[in-house]
Amino acid sequence: MSTVSKKIIKDNFSIFAVADGISSHKNSHIISCKVLEFLYEIFNSSNHFFPVKSIKKIQDRLENISLHSKELKGSATTLAGVYFTDEKATIFHTGDSRVYLFRDQKLIPLTTDHTQAQRMLKSGEISRDEFESCSDLYKMLEGYLVCGELEDEDLIIDTTKIDVKEDDLFFICSDGVTESIDDNELETIFKSSKLEIFVNTLFNEVRKKEIDNFSFIAIKFI
Image (cartoon, rainbow, N blue to C red; front, side, top):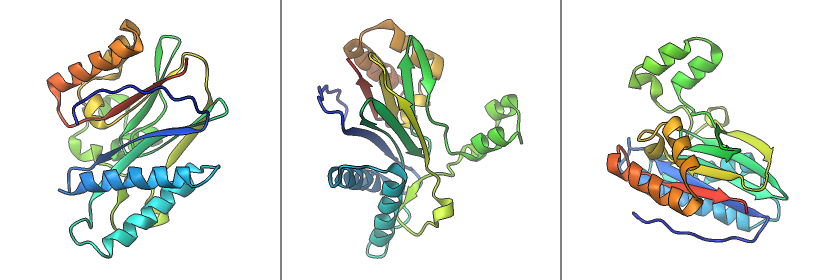
C-alpha cells in the first residue's frame, strides 16, 4: 500500500509496530502480517502487555503454523514497536527494523540492529571503520521471527523503557527507510517541518530511491 494516513488517538494504553518480511523467502510478507495480527490480538486480550513474553508466544504460534503449512515454513520477519502506558514508552524489537525518538531537535536511535556486524562492533571484535566497510555477508540478520522451530536462546529480543515528554516524536520503520536515507538525512527532514509535512516529505524521498519496500509510523505526543 503506497499511501500515507493520519489518525489521532486519545488513549494512554496503545501499541504501534512494524514487521518487515525477510526477502530470503517468497512468503515472508504473509508471516509479517500474521505477526502483527498476533501482536494486536495479544495486546487487546489483556490489560497488561509484556513485550518479551508476547513475542515468545508469537514465535510459538509461528512454529505451530509451520507444522501445517509447507508453503510458509521458513518464512521470517523482523518486528519493532513501541508500547505506551502512563507516560512511559516500552520499545521492543528483533531484527533490523528500527525505533527512533526525535526530541529537542535531536534524532536518537532507540534500537540496535540484530546483525553479526553490530554484535562484533559491540563486543569490540571490529572497529567502527571496519564496521562501516564490512561486506554484506556480515550484515545478515541474527534476530528475527520465523515460521519454524527456533530455540529460546536464538530468539533475540531487546526492550527499553523511557519516560515520554510532550512533543516527543517516535518513529518506527523498516530497513527500506534506513537503507534509502541515513540518520543525518532523517534528522534533517525531522527538523525541517511540521509532522504532516515531514511524513509526506519522508515518504516521497524514500520512494524516489526505494532500494527496498518500506513501512514507517510516526507518533507525536501533543
